[in-house]
Image (cartoon, rainbow, N blue to C red; front, side, top):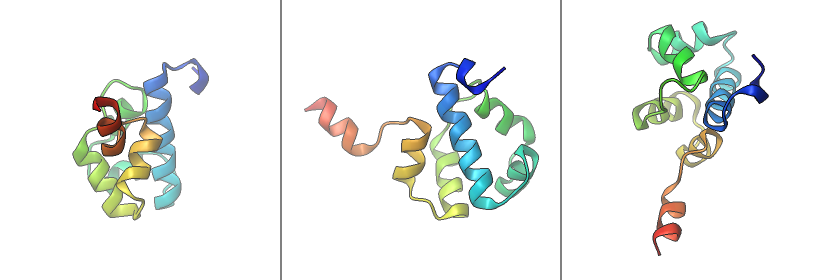
Length: 89
């Protein structure tokens, strides 16, 4: 299965996992799971859109990489505070 064949949320999650792998300079999903101290199936499920990306995952990614929470959420396709306020106004 190619990335373009994944549904939109899974594509965004896939981009986030790839970004984290690049930022942390690990070789693969297993290396990312070790760096983030989560079980390997968690990374796989996030990558394939089977598990939603939670706030704790975003915060842990921010602490490890130094990438802003806003940018991590943008890559993941998650709404940011500014987007929520604009939509509700």
